[in-house]
Image (cartoon, rainbow, N blue to C red):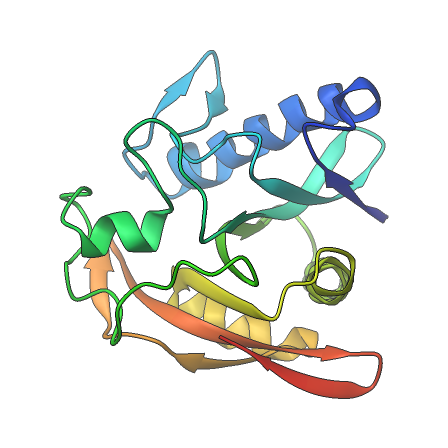
Length: 200
């Protein structure tokens, strides 16, 4: 099991893996969770999948077991910025305007985390391995891309499980119902190289 960061700069080596990540997202969020998300030919994607985003996937070969997307809060593509800010601006009718307790930041050192998932088909032991890999990926991305802060939108259940991967989280907004789950925005704290740094 390994972790790979995918960017539009390394698509020559990671393009096929990226396709499998979108396929795994389709299975997890649409087929399993029943979320109403944009998709085509068994791939899930949306307006935030742009060259400004970076993707982390945990996999063996082309078998994807988990992953997430990070996007700078300075992102802008056509009419979209990033999910939490667009929700706060009323551009995403399925998400509440009150999604964050404070105005959504636009800071090159603050990035949004979205589409976090771990495959339900794995054993509990291997799910824990994937969560650990994802936690280490957050720390690596923070170092590599000079990210000082993360904001994350996820289900409350996933947030509780995230704590087991060595990450610490704190609420960044109120709880709300979306896609049949109780969700919430969170600040993320990454333990990087043995010293904790609060992010967002």
